[in-house]
Length: 215
Image 1 (cartoon, rainbow, N blue to C red):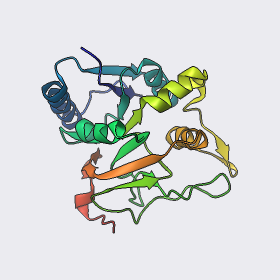
Image 2: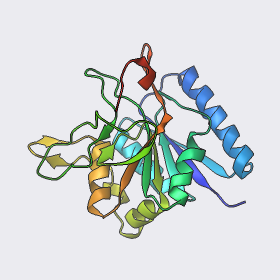
Image 3: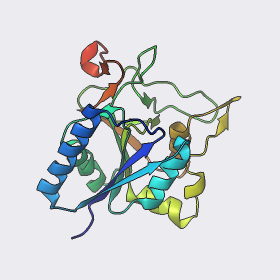
Image 4: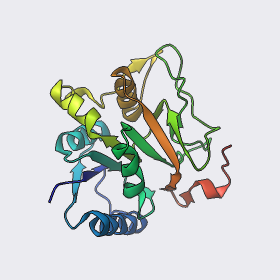
């Protein structure tokens, strides 16, 4: 059976994986098996002390039409992969679900599409609700990267640099946003589907339903 895509988990600790994450992942894989056939989705886990190295490892291991990166402190719907996959099949290059950063001030883990090399990345706080829209970057908490982007990095032998932290406007940029800068510089577009809602596990679950409202 052809591989539809790869689910990639990047771990930077050796603690027990949270139950709510594991439960979400099991249900997601079961749903993928049901709609695309058993074994149609690969699961890859890369562990290490540096998140950027783990993400690079996942990019190398990716097979199929996409790599769905999911962090172990997330909860997500069972059909998240199916919904994001539809956009990849329609020709979009990268699509993230909607979740929120786990620190104050609370803000969505997406950036305004007006991001440039000469202006700082700005959180997309007035995001559009329950639709898909273009963004300038995102976290990789629940993000589907299409094979067009992955193949480009592999063909040009740039995987090893893909998530390395960039230095812009006098400070280092996080590994996820650094990857998004590189994706954008290659001419690809990035989107968020705010109908795919994920929770960010803390001592509580931070999600859109807990008071953060877009437009």
